[in-house]
Structure formats: C-alpha cells, structure tokens
Image (tube, rainbow, N blue to C red; front, side, top):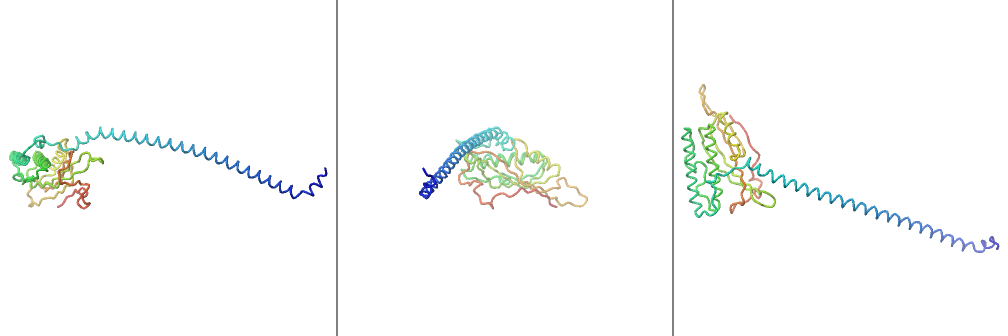
Length: 284
C-alpha cells in the first residue's frame, strides 16, 4: 500500500478526523477535570458544612451552659443581694390580703407611727414635725394603694427614729416622693418597688456620718440618691452643736408581686420624668 499516495488523496479527510479526535480528547479531558473539581468541591463543602454544624452545636451547648450557670448564679446571689440592700417591711405594716377596711387600718397605723416618732423625739429632747402628715405620710390613700402607703409609713417612721438614735436633734421635714416600679425581669415576674423620700435635718459632721452608717444596715438599707449639705450661719465666737443643714434623698427597695392599679412602670415613663444622676454637694 502506498501511504504517500493515500495521504495525498485523502489528507483533507484525515486531518478533519484527526482534529475531531483531538478536540474530543481535549473535551473529554476537560470534562473529567471539571467533574473531578466538582467532586472535590462537593467533598470540601460537605466537610465545611459538617464543621459548621459542629461549631453551631458547640455554641448552642456553650450558650445553654452559660445560661444555666447565669441562672444558677442568679438564684444563689439574688437572695443575698436582696438581704443586703432590700427594705424589709415590719410585719405590723403589711396589709393583710383579707383586710375588709384597709383605709381604717391605714389611718390607725399612720397615727401609731407618728406617735412612735414623737415619743422617740421626746426621749432625746429633739424636734420633729408633728402628726403623720407632718412626717410626710399620706392623708388618705386610694384603696388600691393602701399597701404601698403602709410601706411608706414604715419607711418614714423608721427613718426618723434612726436619725434620732444617731444623734440628730432637729428634723425639719420629710417629703414622700412618687413611688416607682421597675420590672424584675424581661418575663415581667414581679417588680422592684422604689419608695423615695427626702428628709431635711440639722447635724454635725460626726452625726451625719453616723446617721449615714445607720441607714446602710441589712434589713433597713436605703439607697442614697443625693446628699446636699449647707453650713448654717452662726454668730462670731458662738459655736452651734448642729452646724450643718442636711438634705438627704433616699429610697427603699423591695420586691412586690404586682403594681397597684393605675400605676405605670418606671420603664414606661418619659425620659424627662426619670431620675437623673446622683447628686452630692456642699454649700456655704
């Protein structure tokens, strides 16, 4: 067979076939490469997905563990914190759930509290405002707020007596401020009740220090919101036993199950009605 003659006669056909075979080989190789890369990519994606799922599971477990730790820590710490900074109401000033005449009970206990303060003042030869309203107690609270008002009576009574026992001999004024309620947690299970009161009295520096210490004890702890001290004017060469005019604003904190009817949570109050920063100052 004369290959040269065959080549010369059929070279165009042979080249076409050869080119087609070459292209087919290239395409087959490229397809195989793409398939291999796709398979590798699938394996890589599966591996990454598995790692991601493992990471998510670890995070969920860690989150659950941290949440459990936080809840356990809160369960242990909350009672201790409340014992330290909470105001424990005297049992005599708690409103019984089955009380049929809360208004009469309030009037009786407010008068009794005022008498106790006046007796303590007499024992120390001190001066205090007269009567329950003079001591900042409400005249006649709404029926739904008698429990809250009784807590204020207990606060004002014990606050005045503690100041007298600490050496204060002149209490000029006690003014109740509006109570506030803060949700205890996001679930709305209970509220922290804040009962603020402003008290003005005369004292020496040593008496003021002792009074502040007496107001920071467990069971009768009050949060100090502001303390304004003014030096009283005196005559030259004449010393006075109570050279300072003191205005304290404090508040008692306690847990309650619910707010009285018609009272809005402090979280719902306009920003302008919320308490500003603590104020401590001295004036001459």
